[in-house]
Length: 206
Image (cartoon, rainbow, N blue to C red; front, side, top):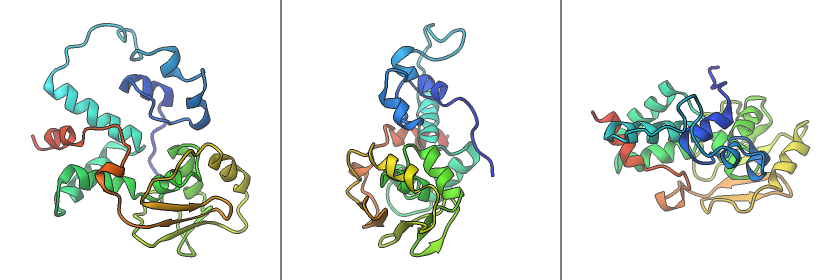
């Protein structure tokens, strides 16, 4: 299974914002964006000409890193989104939001998307009572996500729920019993991804 092994804090610095890739660390003074609020590399503090293409590229990279997916997979989501009815950009974000690893994170069962992805990959979660260990699995309305009864990661998952201030309105979470439910597909106003999806559509439309 392909995955991004590049330093996570460098990704946040490159995009100029906290992408919440390291869970609890992102809330402390150790956060790299707080300590060095400029892009990494020898020329990180230099002036960069912000052309149209660069703005579109940076927005795509930001979205890809925010949801922790690789380039080929991200482009596949765009192709699927463009073939659906409705606004392509919103369709794209909806597909990314309803990935199982993202839903686990949104429910508060993972301190970060990377941790949620690992927990899913190691089969600590069940969807409608069935084992699902594919992070990209697309959840649907009325799906029930629960922690495996004999999971050895229960304490880790409970610790993650302590970092959760609120749960997305299209989801329902029971942190005491470690279960969650997908109430419906999310609306654009309910997706907190810090991206301008129209710029991504413009980039891929060239």
